[in-house]
Length: 365
Image (tube, rainbow, N blue to C red; front, side):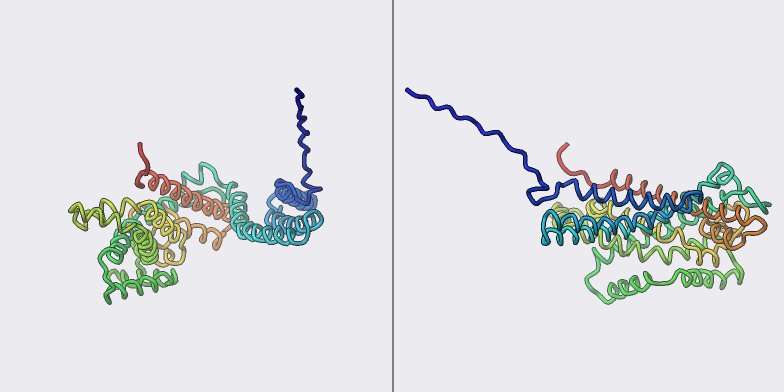
């Protein structure tokens, strides 16, 4: 009886370069090398100059263009023209995304570099009262921004949310609903200065010309915030499946309670996000607040009496009226801009936490 022995042939490793295919890590390596080259060139050109003169935006942009060219040439040599064309198109689409982010990256980089110069305890603990040159802070503007934004939110959110509930849950395509939708769309495109003029004109009829109060600024910002809340909340409410409403109706739940207990909790995450987008839309407005809330160098916590400073107006005032110490005024303006960005970021993080806590839970526990 003969026995046959089979010998297993060893597995040969395939070299992707010789098999006509680039390794998966090559595009990322080429992108990193391209950025490294352009950053090195810009660093050499920036020798002996302040670090804030380093043009990071141009370095990333030119490095991305170099990556598109390099990956196209390398793929054409190894993989052929068809695969090279596919990689070039993919690289161009990815580069377009990177280029779209460059203004944001450049803005954040510039604000952080310039703003940290006055990001100190004095800036957050003192106002500009009796300050002519160096020193001073923006505590009065920070409080004014928070108070006016809070008042704007209290005014706008109930009106906007109830309007969107009417349009989605109670409207039957009547003339009233079509008129509301039309005017909401028109209000979305109103220039901010017009909203400020409207609020100022209304209060000037009762209190006389020259009136300036924080509450007038809140009303002016409400004109801008309400349509954003209406449109975003309306879209979120329409995403709630009708099956959930029908199930509640089948159990005998009245319509108002279905909206309160089923529809709104289901869409609360999207509604909260829309509200935060609306707040971010108005918190940086300057023109309407110049007309309505005015500006002051002292701390004022009363929305219904006297001028009230806000961070956008503070930044504008420090840059436009630099006084005897231009460098100090510009540094305070950059610090105010950085503070405003941080406030918006904190509000967005808080909104995400609220949406996560109150959104409906899925799955078994």
